[in-house]
Amino acid sequence: MVTFNLTVPLSVDFSRPEDYLIFIFHILFATGSVLLAGSVVIGIMSTRALRSQNRFIFMLNTSISDTLTGCSVFYLGLFDVQEGYPSRNGTYYILPSFLGVNVLTFVFAQFDRYLAVCHPFFYKRYISRGVVIGVCALCWIYTYSILTVQSVVPVAFAAQMNAFGVIVLQVIVAVKVLMTIKLYMITRYQLSREAPGTDKESKKESLRIIVFVVICFLILWAPSFVNISVKYVTKNGLRFKNEATNLFAIMARFNALSTPALYIWGSPALRAAVWNSVWGKIFKRRKTRVASGHVKSAKGGERILSIT
Image 1: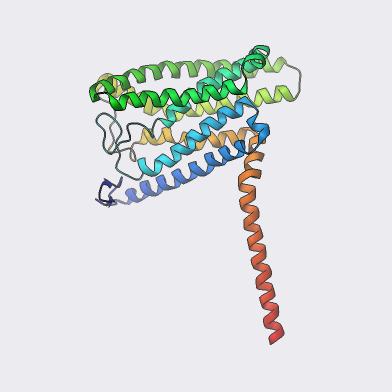
Image 2 (image 1 turned 120 degrees about the vertical axis):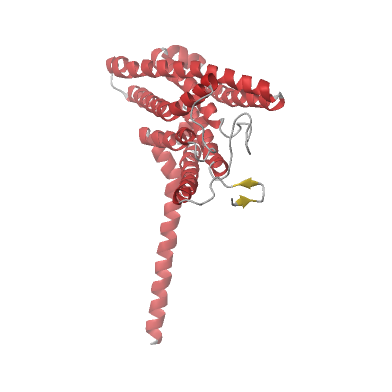
């Protein structure tokens, strides 16, 4: 098998045609996730009007996580890695847990939208930008403090903690499903009774985005979650050679691409910010270079004609 630095083997040995497809897929997926989610991060960070809104702070938090998830695929997808107890060339769940940060962030974002629409006076008085930033920081602190404890305790106890984490995750997923249904009902019935205006459209847009994002997240992440739960309960479930060939893990990581794409699709303000802050500047520079190249070639042609 081909190796990298004679320590960690690559995820595939290139003995079959599909091995090349798997390897190329992970390179393209990782690159696309970093570029798309990273552009959302830059767009929000560089636009003051977006940074001042709580819902975009939650988007920023998940987009940072998605960018790091894309970066993690360069290791999890290209090298022979198997997370678990025991693991093989694993990262103590440090890299896969970026998705865990998103799970918690989405739950708080759903409650944020519920309070903003159903209890606007309470929301404006108590849910400040600092509170939202603190909640987002709490998502990271909680997730990686648990991982820190798991990395220093014996493997048997760490496995028990991981099993307990799966149970907690089941509760969180149930809450997410209920909140998604609740927000959908609010979008369809309660907002329809409000008077037309920019505030109504902003609420409708934010609710639509969070509902679509959470539904997509649950659809892509559910197979991996069910398979992990089955393995813990029955010791059966599907097992894969490594993270690169784990179809369920690949589907879960695909959220790093779908989530920022849904953000950009659902928010015209974010779409404009991403274009003005990132891609517009890149394409503008490219056009400038191409135009300058044509000018230089034209001048060179004029000089040749004048000589002849």
